[in-house]
Length: 297
Length: 274
Image (cartoon, rainbow over all chains, first blue to last red; front, side, top):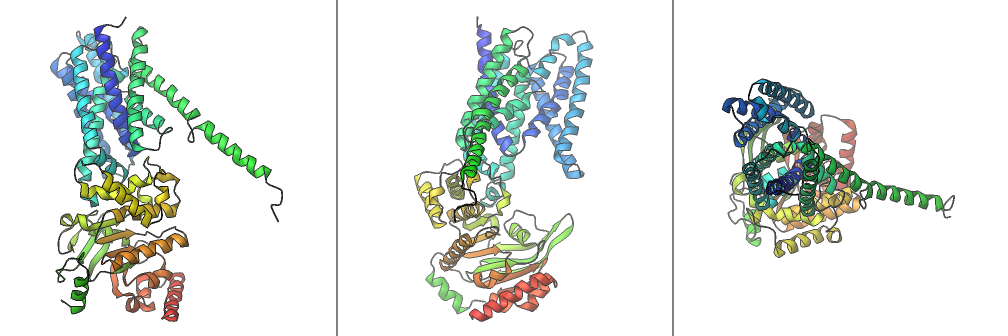
């Protein structure tokens, strides 16, 4: 039976995953997808520190801490790229593991304190919606809604700066500020996604909808709408599955549902799918083998 | 320098600013450096008359850098740039740009018309979406480059030449007076090159100015009224007939024989046609 609390959690999850799908499209197309992953892992120590400072579990404070340390992580990646010869993928790898390591150490320290068991820090690593209260969900849904509105409003500007930032700059758009806004939205999405999906798997919630829908459409608008719908359905389905099985974390369930849909799309999508491409390649081979040997004189 | 020739031309062309004393483009002592290494050194050039200008020089000569610095995409180390007597920020609406083809991801999920529509975004301003007028204008620009029937294709399905023409149509959609094009004829077939050249001429005849980074020395005398020979410094700038000469090319390319042979061929071709 679905309780009032479950219904609210499902609604919040749907909204969050729709936002993640949308924001993820911009990140994937701009090749910033790994930035989301770095941000998520770098958020863990901030989350723990906020708990240590307050001494009690307060979601807004912990999410603020997560946002700050996630942001610090992104700055570290940019600093490493600008200040050394380290390339971005390596910099992301370093920052991601160092921050995540620090976060795990902090969370173990918290677990060993008398009240630490109640912090529920585990749920931020793999995601868990069971312990969420209505107020938490309202916070998440509120931020998600505001972010969705912002994306809708600046659709044209964000599209231009994602496709061709130099051209945007020449037309007088503040490309840097628009880019920063998209990054900030990415950060917000990751952070409000932590309680539901967890640090480890949030990146997949950003990336899977976009790459799956890309099999089905060549249009920017339908890619965005499709990714939002795809995101929310995988979020809903995953959350529902995890709520029916005891002790099943939400994040992995959501991601596995999304992966199944991704694989199905990769297989059967028209034109871009494996089957369609295999058929096309076969037809091409058939044509060449049917051609008369030696060609037409 | 207010020559009567320019005044007469300006009077015929109402689209061009009537104050002829103001140069279209004025580059003064421009120096640009990457990581403290100068890429452009003390470039001085003034464009007074609407014309078709080729920017020519060896690889790494700073041709793209010159365009990007003038457009404010790269920081200027020293010197100044004025377009229509003003800073780039004040005249963005009059500037058109064709970047190098490799500068964007062609797998991006947009169709050809959408890319061309982006040329109208500057005039639309914040948050306004392109409407029927913009879409008709975009189709008109696509017809100009001969791509109208490809309007609904995803850009990744285009050939290299068609991609190049898409960028050109987007620049046309900007309704500019001064165009900057970075190798618009790189990797296109002869038919496309002819189409593009035709368009450039048409723009010039409408009183617009077009600066084109160009790599094929053989076609320089054929295409351009003026030529800038660039190799970190501006070696020479002037009418193609007096500037595109073997000794100035030698100075620009520093005696690379294969290229000089091409240049000699080009000069001979021009002399034959003259």
